[in-house]
Length: 147
Image (cartoon, rainbow, N blue to C red):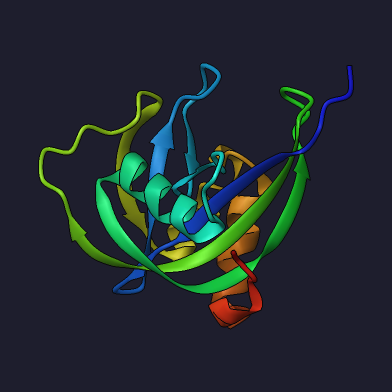
């Protein structure tokens, strides 16, 4: 059977020189990640990114920019991921929101703090997207054609 790449979305969410992360336990190990997940049927990339941010952090966010497309092959599960990453602004946090099952909690980390946790990141894409964001490599949403 042919395994096709998994289409995923993620958000880099900056606030006061820090970034919103989730701590999750996807395969028995605790790792850090941006709010991220799979594109669902009949969903746009942008709406998927906003939905995943809410489900994993309790934050209602607004996607403001496109960051890039990142491909990663996971040696842990043999899956190839094609991640569409976005920049999003946090609007408000929903109090008492129940997070997805795999999420332990959320935290805000500076770039320096995130780099220090490099071995605990879910994949190399996590830090690569932060570096691209801080290097100003984000683009207008108009480059994405949706219908």
